[in-house]
Length: 205
Ligand code: SF4
Image (tube, rainbow, N blue to C red; front, side):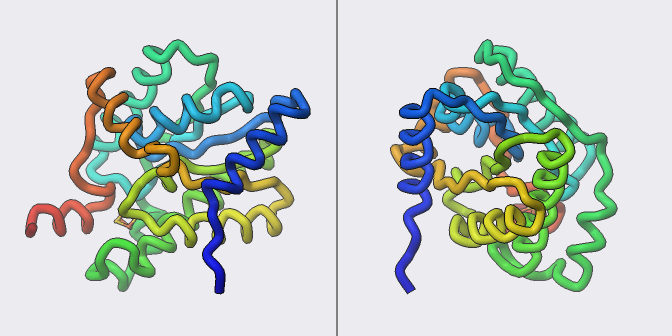
């Protein structure tokens, strides 16, 4: 099967919006400040963006709060007119979905469930808010399965009746740009994905 170029799909959508002069609303799921930095700047001229911080996978709670506060600081320092919706810490749904999959590595079934959970929450919230689109910053990470994220978003869009914005934010040196922006704004760059299992894997080398 031919690989879909999700970066091209995003650029085609942005070109279409530019031509039409429309600026639809977008609910952007954000995993952390570094991944949001490039993504926000890339999309800002084309959408009215609301950022959604919903990441029950992150552990411990102090890490969750730190990543959330860094995201708020970034948005404030970038001076963007962007609203942020954040969830209080509740890791229970994550441990329920990860049950029996704790030993698996990154990009495994555990990660697929973790990503799907967060995308579904974002799609549900987008529907409640009446947003035109929803998407996630997660495709900027070279450690994530971009095709899976987009396929999952597309499936949920059909199910929920809210359009999903396909993306590959790594394109156009997006990941490199996020590292530069992290340096510029002195952002905290975590060295593990988020859950306790990814942290243990990092500690064990
Ligand atoms: S490694 Fe990352 S994507 Fe996978 S389950 Fe843990 S937090 Fe979720």
